[in-house]
Image 1 (cartoon, helix red, strand yellow):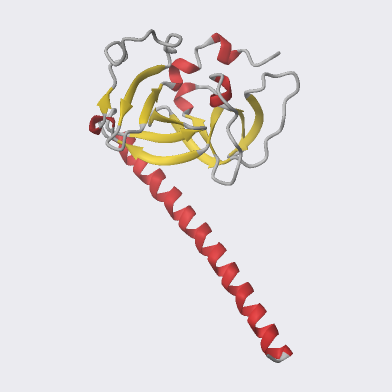
Image 2 (cartoon, helix red, strand yellow):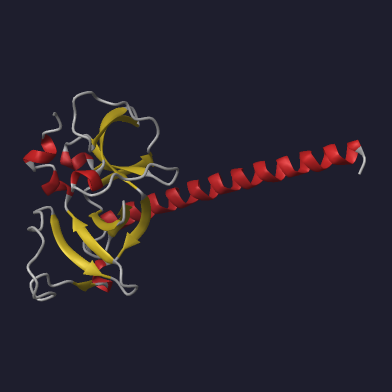
Length: 200
């Protein structure tokens, strides 16, 4: 292979890599745009339980009421705040508004959420009057709780429950694939004194 043809091959490979990367970003933008449109349409509907946002936080799956969910943005740069709890990750600029970012998995006493390119910040709805957001491992799209089976916590096991269920976890469901989903109420979460007390 001549030096000229070798250079041509390198240029072609580079161009292919760049176009693949641009294509992935475009598809991600399209997905986010379509998801936001569907969320807006679902918020306008009357079937609240049927229209919930599914997210993965750490290894746990959660359902969030669309009326309590705000924007979904990339995790971006977080500004650390000294002398705060480990689950308080810091401040992020969400559309010009300083928003505190919480690692909900760590707040619940589980492992810290691994921060990678698929992570997003789910901002709380303006209706909650609380500038905060949850770090989520992955946005799983809209979910219909009416198509899942409600888990009866009292009847599901004869063994004693490990700790009482938190008041902001309304229900738990199991889907057709056997995945367990916890219904998370952000409006109740922001009333919890431990959640409000971020300082050490």
